[in-house]
Image (tube, rainbow over all chains, first blue to last red; front, side, top):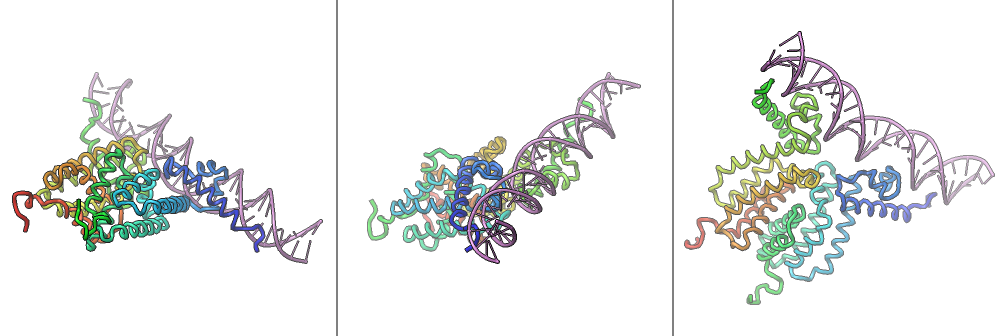
Length: 189
Length: 189
DNA sequence: ACACCTCTTGATCGCCATACAAGAGTGGTA
DNA sequence: TACCACTCTTGTATGGCGATCAAGAGGTGT
């Protein structure tokens, strides 16, 4: 065993720092949050962040991981609802972190690690959506349909629309997906 | 008439600076292009850019205006093609400036002028698309449909997909739009 | 000859992300 | 006890950035 026990405390401290970063990133945005402000929020010296987490992109990735894990956990509770409602829920749920969507896209190519995270994010979420759309759309078009839906959600997050307009987009999207309860075998209406 | 004749020369010089900025923004991206590098590209002192154009956001807006004007002019030549082809053309045409899409979204809220430009951009392009979709989709859903298409184009630009996948998304999108030649009154096939 | 305006510049400021090196605290060892 | 090794923390640079300022160069009108 090493001298000053590692692991436990280190993990906790890292989580505290990432939580502070998450608060500021969500509230003020990535660009408007300086590493100095982040350290101040967490009540540590500026360099301590680098010791526990890494550079600013590493902090962003850690924050995104936390947000994604939480979002996926919450999603489990509504995964059995109709697709239209799932879509609406997703958009409203992600609205709190909408500033980070454009940040990630803008920083792809500047940070290889972030690029990798972005790829993994899309693989994960698109996998879920693809599974949910199985049987609801033409199998040959499912990949394109998944991408259209994901792009629409991202667009709804990066653009300031009224809630009624957001709902209209979600509903129009879901309109061409056959709801599970209306799958072939049952007549509509 | 003022002393040292304004207007003509000033306009030319400004255009030169914006052209230089456009080259660098498109090639390296907005963040990776420093005002110093821009001045070097245009062979002027760093401050000269501020004199002719303004701060970095003003430069970005000027570049975006130039790109938009050129794009709209080019669009006129294909505006009579089928919607599916127009969509494909738009995505491929805008690919050269794809890095700027995320930049604009990321900087909204940091620059009021850019925010205004973004609003005007969407009003303009969505107006065009809405006119093109008149009669091709259910009138009550046309707003949502326009937004879905615009978000899809933006998504195709901010994400690195193969050409085949880009085409698949465009085709899937256009699949539910009735082509002008297939409008009610003529039987399909 | 003088005043005036446009344009250009070098020097400078403040902020930022990040690196460095020294120090404080703590556990193991002799 | 004294010493060392390791983890952690900090104060202090460093280099680059966007942006500003005050001074001057060069042409224009009176």
